[in-house]
Image 1 (cartoon, one colour):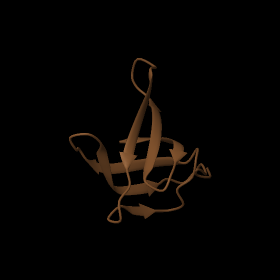
Image 2: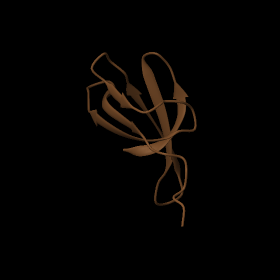
Image 3: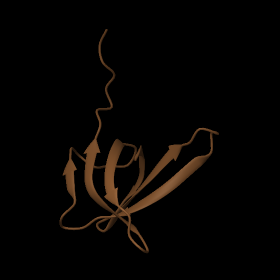
Image 4: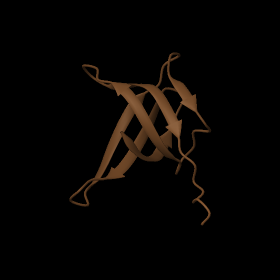
Length: 73
């Protein structure tokens, strides 16, 4: 799942994203000791999250922070 980080805490991260019908969707992921983060995780960062679904919460397995800079032409 990809989106923009709206909240970061020691035990979870929350993303927002706009879906096809322009509805804003929020999704929270549990962070564990096994969660790997590539890059600096901060509010307003664009990220891609690999996760596993749980009964109550989804757990982030891998978070990739994408570059905020646009490629030069």
